[in-house]
Length: 415
Ligand code: ADP
Image (cartoon, rainbow, N blue to C red; front, side, top):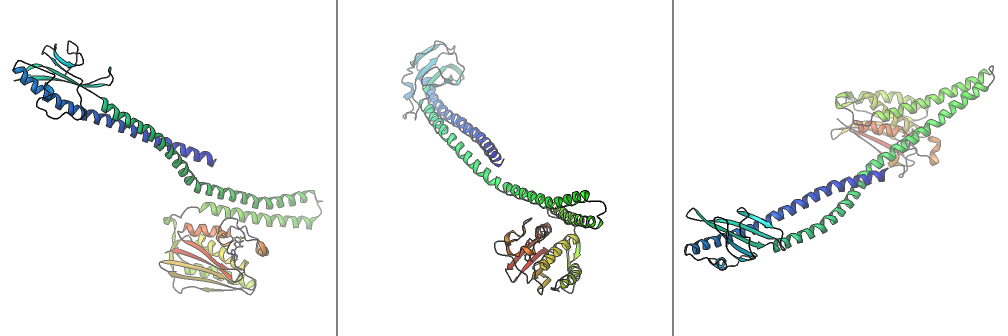
C-alpha cells in the first residue's frame, strides 16, 4: 500500500514538474527563435535601407548597379548576414534588375519580412518599397541565408533534447525520495494504529473468552448448584467491569486526540483540585502501607483546563505510584509555578523504570514486564491517556526514574 502510494506520489510529482519543465523549455525555444529572427531582421533591414538609399541615389543618376550598391555607404560587412540575392522591381512590380539567385519576373510578395523555406538553407527575405520625394520608384528585395540562425537553434534544440530528459530523470528520483519522506509519518501513524488495534482486540479477547466459558459452564451445570452459579456470575461481573474500564479508556483516548478548544475550558483552581485528590489517595495509600504527602501552595492557582480530565491524569499517576511502590514507601504530590507554567509532580520511592523502557511507557498498551511482572495488572493505557490529556491542554508530561529508587512524573501546564 505504501509502496504504491509512494510510486503514485513520485509519478504525479514527475508528471507535474515534467510538464512545467517541458512547457518552460518550449517557451525558451520560442523566445530564442523570436530573438534570433529579430536580430537578423534588424541587420537585414539596416543593410537593405542603406542599399535603398544608394539605389535611390543611383536611380536619380539614371544608372543602377545593384551588385555594387550594397557596398556603397557601408564600409563594414554586416556581421553574419551574407546576401543571397538583391532584386529591384519597378513600381508596377516587374523585375528590373537582380544579382544572385535568379528572380521571378513579377513581385508576388507584399512588402515586409518573409522566410523562404523551399531552399536549403532557408532564406530570410525583406521587401522594401523605395520612395523618392514621396513617389514610389520601385521595390528592393534582399535575401540572406538563415544558416547561422538555424545552426544556433539546432544547437539549442540539441541542448534541450539532452537536458530535458536528464532533468526529468532527476525530478523522478527527487519525487521518489520526497514520496518516501512524505510517507514516513503516515507509515509511522499507520503502524501505531495497527499495533494499537491489535493490542485492543487482544486485550478484549481474553475477558470475552472468560465471560463466554463461565456462561457456557453455568448453562451446562445442574440447576440446583446455587453457590457455583453465583461464583461464575461474580467472575462474569468482574471480567465485564474490567472490559468496561478498558473500553472507557479506549474511548477516552479516541476522544482527546486533538488539542482542546480553549473556549470549552474553565478556570480551574488546581490547588483545591489536587487537595481533593490527595485526600482520597492519602487514605488509599495508607491502606497499602504507603505514606502520601502533598506540597501545595496556600493560595488558589487558576488555569484554563477541563477539571475531570486533569483529575483523571493525576489519579492515573497516583494510582501507578501506589501500584509500583512496595509497602513502607513514600509518595509525594507537589504543585508550584515556574516560568508562567503550573508544575505538578508525582514522585514515588518505588521500583522505578529501566532506561530502555522509560521512552516507551507513554505508548498505549506498553507494560514493563520482566521481573516486576507481579506489579502488572493494568492495560498499559494509564500513562498514554495521561499524556494525551496533558498534550490536549497544550502541556507536557515527562518522566524520570532510577530503578530501585523511584520515579517522578512532571506535568507542565500553560497558565
Ligand atoms: P498500567 O495500567 O499497566 O499501569 P500505565 O500506562 O499506567 O499502565 O503504565 C505503563 C507501565 O509503566 C506500567 O506497566 C509500569 O510498568 C510502568 N510504570 C508506570 N508508572 C510507574 C511507576 N510510578 N513506577 C514504576 N513503573 C511505572
